[in-house]
Length: 110
Image (cartoon, rainbow, N blue to C red; front, side, top):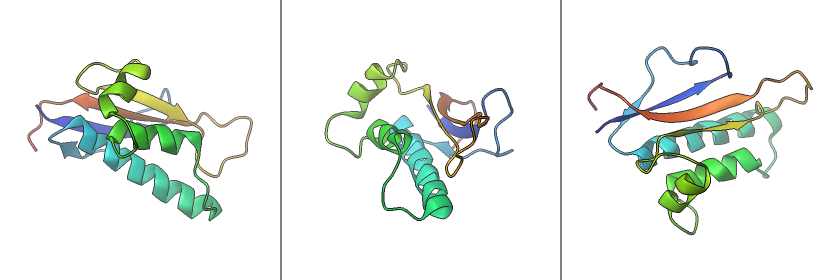
């Protein structure tokens, strides 16, 4: 069953008109983690990453422990569908709506 990875500002359509499709939820979460990492690297140049990055990393299964355990902790479905929200990388505005990183099942083929 294929999974799609999307990033959007909450309340708005996804930023990518043709979001990537993956064979597993873990692959989709890895993609989202990589996108967050690029955004944080581009915006502040710091070696420190945000809490949002580390949650995405755990959801991808790349940290100690199981991705499935993290999915359960985040309230995702058992197959890894869910959303992680965090501030926009580089934003220090009190009006920042943030970004939503989501994985869901799709009908598209990989």
